[in-house]
Length: 247
Image 1 (cartoon, rainbow, N blue to C red):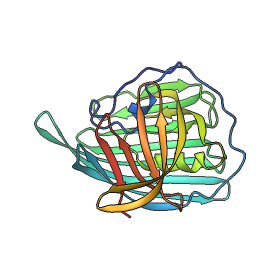
Image 2 (image 1 turned 120 degrees about the horizontal axis):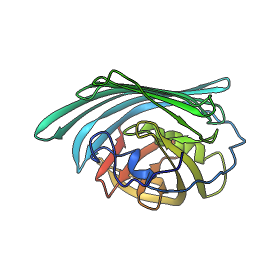
Image 3 (image 1 turned 180 degrees about the horizontal axis):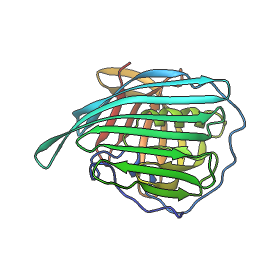
Image 4 (image 1 turned 135 degrees about the vertical axis):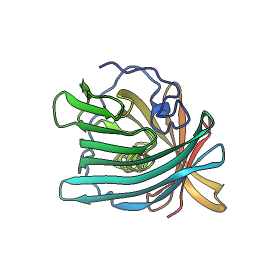
């Protein structure tokens, strides 16, 4: 399937975009798969904000075992939409090989817009099934994706932690990745570049962190990482979305 051009899409029409906005691109490339396995063990909590106002929280857990990495989270958000408060609660779970090749992905969302999504990347082509509470039939789609495709789903902040871990497998300061947004069913290509150390102030903290920039031809997302390889902040200036690690 060809990549789509997408500026700001998401579950709530562009308000929540931490996946979809970054893949507003076209075309595809085939960088080689990483050849070094690494422990991605991590857990913590992100607080998310829209235009400086609290949006929700994400409690995540990434754990590695022999030949496998499992990443899951509990995400809660409250968003004002059309004069009403929209409550969202989702539980994404991504399983990868130790080489960061996706195997399966599932997300259950409860609240105002319930759905269930499953993607099997082990099949060729990959198989995606989306079930909406308002529909009697599943949305079934097949995609031809690279084995090492990077998963960045809508509103799942810890997927950027996995991107940071993947980036660290190679010494190059600028790398290109094939990527895929499961909830949008959108593949694309993104570039990650390390800018270097930077003194930053956010959430009442003053720290020196590594600055990484994720770009496509239509979007930019800034990441800040500490010395233990832990993602501390995600910021999309154009969409006014920010995620800050609190634990």
